[in-house]
Length: 247
Length: 247
Image: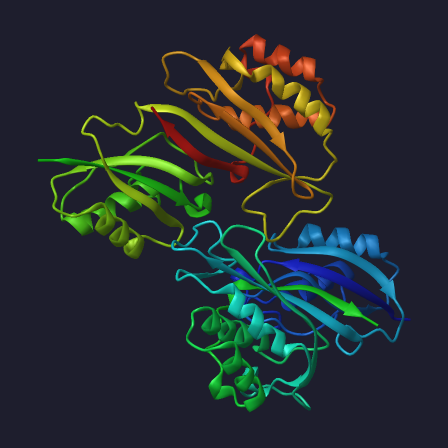
């Protein structure tokens, strides 16, 4: 009888064409499924909490897979970490109830977006931040970000052509941290995210920080529900899926 | 008449075969010299404060070059950052006295070595730390590191075949910071470093932390002046040249 396993995953998205399995290109889902097949000698389908796009990182992506096996979660974890490339690390593996589904049982997700705000770029951080050389007005960005808290139709920040039943999401947490010199972290938690939603919110916030639009304009963009008013999608390398929270 | 320019440089050593210019392989010195030639249309020789090995990073390497030019330091800096690959960033460029020499005028250098001490490796940090999964006894390492402070013959920690007049160096600062969870940073400042010296000190400190040798054994290794007693050279990716201090 099939057992159900949940794994949490850290990955460096730099050299991947995103989460989703693809015929030719390197994907996180594809790499893990391939190793699961080596370990179990069975074709196994891995269900992620959702996709991440090319270049996006994760400190705590979640996924589940079903398999008729005598192998323990500890054995799966050791085997996966031994056989996976070093840009994927399995942080945990556990047995879960048969009806657990990594996508449908999601309660909320936490994303961070990292901006390096200083005159010069960083050689070391270049694959993990969006570098903005002009000084950002963080106070104005904080005023703007207040507007997205709570339930809203986030159509204005949605990527085109994304499949979903509706665009209303509940933004549980939205704040900007600036602990480290030059580094701004936009921290968002919501019950779900539309495609490109974080990156479109961030680029529009950056327009506020640059003084191109006001915090009030930011709110008008949200209320317009019209994608063409928001900023261009922010680059992928600043985005981290921090964790997936389940019921 | 030739003018003398000093530059400070940040680089991600991951994709370089070290600082030093090489015929075939990608080097930091080689890349910068090539761009200086594009900017000035002259062959320019860049003098670094010293070499860093393949995979070693720098947050503040220093170098100087001489050139008969009307270009300002600001123009050099902009041109270099525009034309260099993104894993090299020029942090500053300034005119210096004719007799300034980036290697011979060094007063001291600061290196950090980063160890990730937790059961699992990190996908995101893998190119910037040495991962040690077994728990290190940091107290013992701190007792050991006290022994290298001050003037010593560091032959025991020297790489073989390195050219130098003598092996006595003055260790001005030697400490271990552990601010961030799981991350240990060995911070060293000396008036000079022998080849592989930091990485050999760190590997021997790790042997102390693992309980393989005692802090007193560490001191005996230092006093033995015999390379074969120290640990194997620690991997390059944990090492950062932080800054070069001049008279």
